[in-house]
Image (cartoon, rainbow, N blue to C red):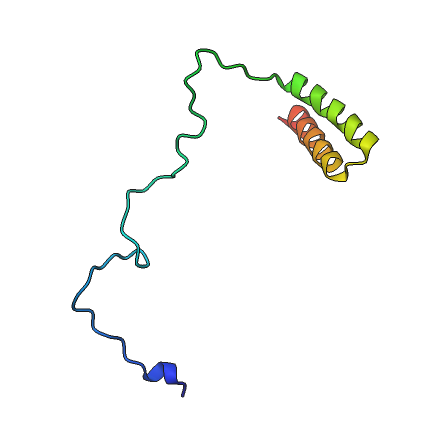
Length: 88
């Protein structure tokens, strides 16, 4: 038998019961819930065709300078765009 099986739990008779691993209970919700909100009067959203054109330009520049991470990112974005356009 291990020593752990011999330890008897202490009866809690004082202190707070938080039920939250020792932290105070707080209201549910994300601390980042305000992300995405804007006070702007107009919001400009880039069209998918413009975005993919810019990704192709970035891919060409990344290949020219040899940035492998950027090349992989651009290729993945182009792949995702093609899958969405052809299958959705």
